[in-house]
Image (cartoon, rainbow, N blue to C red):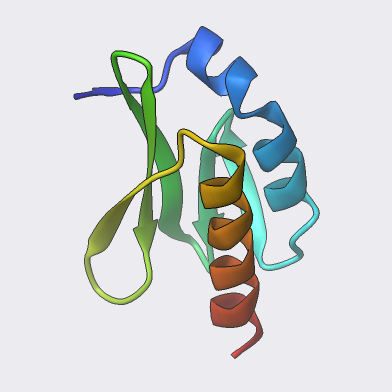
Length: 84
């Protein structure tokens, strides 16, 4: 599974815009976000499927975010984690 390329990130642009609005996150390069100077979320692609690697705790957790509903769930989870 490879890191998300330009075309995959283009498909995620609405999600990326939502992440950019979260004050706790800083985008170091397109699609790579840090929280408190530590890598927090980045993206992968595998064929047409898209995934987010999120550091909810010490290790990254991979979540499929191919569909819009899955992306909405991800945003809700991130809001909850970043507000605590």
